[in-house]
Length: 283
Image (cartoon, rainbow, N blue to C red; front, side, top):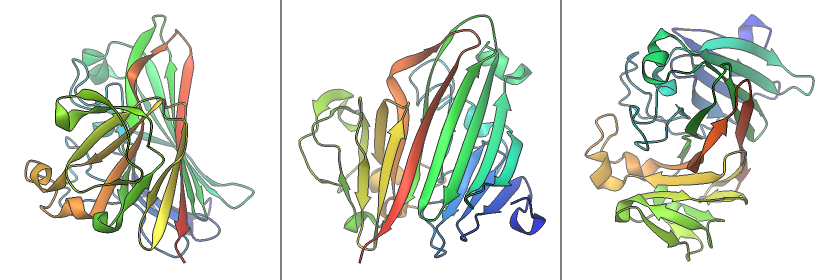
C-alpha cells in the first residue's frame, strides 16, 4: 500500500487494499474502521445510512473504539472520548505476505485531560487479507501515575438477523442489561436474536461464531476478557436517531471488551487486546 493507487486519504478517510483485493476503509475521526470487504467485494460490516459524519458525533456502525469508559460505567461521557477524537495515521503499508496494515494513533490532549487527567497513547492496529480482519488496540500509560480504564471494539457485523444464529456463548455468566442488569448463566445454544439483546458475557475464552445463510463470521479475542452482544431491535432503533427503524434487521454487534474488571495500567506500562474476524462462506 505504499503505492498511492492503493491508499486514498479523502476527507479524513483512508482506503487501503491488500495484495489479494481485500479492502478496509478507516476514518481518522474516532480511529474508526468503517468498511471491511473480503476479496470477493462483499461488505462484512454494517454502517448506518443515517450517519451525519460530524466531528462532534460518533460514527454509527463499523468498529468504534471505546475508551476509556465502556457505556455509562463511570463518570465520563458514554463510551468515552476515543470514538469522537481526531486520530493520526502512523503507518499504511503492505506486509511481505501481501496483507495490508494500517496503524492509527491517539494521545492525550488538553481536551482529554479535562475529563481524564492522564497521559496516555492509543494505537489501533488493523491488519487484513483474504477472509480475515485483525483489529488490535494498544493502550500505553505515559504518565507517572497508574490509571484504570474499560474499553471495547464495538464491532457491527453485517447480518440478516432473521437468518442469524450465534454459537459459542453457552455456559458463560453474563449481565443482561435488558433485564435490569441481572447476572445470569447462558443456557441456549445457539442464540437466536428475536428481541432486544444487550448482554456482557464475562471471561470469554472461546471463539464466537455468527452464522448466517450465506456466510459465517468467527470472532476470536485475546486481552479483552469479556464479549458484548447487542441488537437494539425495533424499540431500540426508535430511540437512536442515526439508525433507521429497520436497521436492527441488518446487524449484530459482537464486541471484544474489558468491562467487568477495569484494567489497571501502571506508569509507563502497556496493555493490548485484539479481535480477529474470519469470514467463512457457506456452501
